[in-house]
Image (cartoon, rainbow, N blue to C red; front, side, top):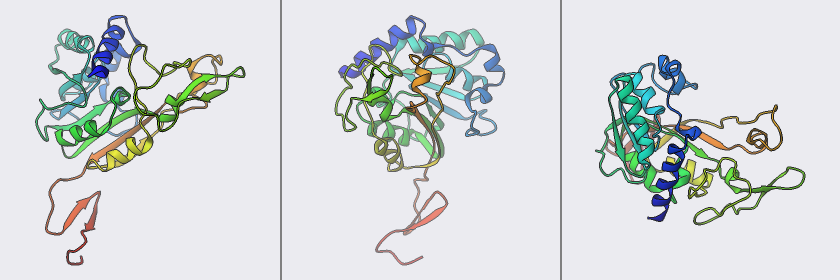
Length: 274
């Protein structure tokens, strides 16, 4: 699969050359790991003893913070160099984590209902389809388990360039198929990576039909009113780069003709009334 090989090489290069996204957790961040990880209050008050899957999140930051908070951590990434940072930092801090070298859309080596929390930073833009990713997360997370994910907004990936007035031009079709073409505007794009545009119906709707109930949705603000127009923070004033969601796995078990979902009972057609 060319997209995997290409993205593996791209992220190895980014990690080996000190990318911003390969910054390990600091001592200060590790002193209050949950506060660092969770500024929105989405996580439990304690994750000690919980099984956490850090999905496509190598780099020595997220997995290290969860381990500092007492969780049993498994981190999956396609890049060996990103996982190397996790292993090095865990060893330096005397932490125990498990690293797995695989793509986010192939978790076949992980058992069913193995995790209480799955936490995934921006990464789904590197796979052509969200369906296998959501299907795998749905399989490995336990009933009522939490799935926190962040994605690139489709409109952000549609921006092709700026005109002479520094207005942002949408030069990529919303129904773009296949890898994104190269563009002049490379804000929020990783050099050398193969990326794909996923529509909101795929990001949000696809999660719902995969067995999850969305409990919260945020658009992280990346607007900066104190920078030059060439800065990506200026772009953030006009185009939201990300969407972040907290979802919970619906219980798989059914009882007679009803199924519990998000606190409601759903009547199944053809069954006796409730």
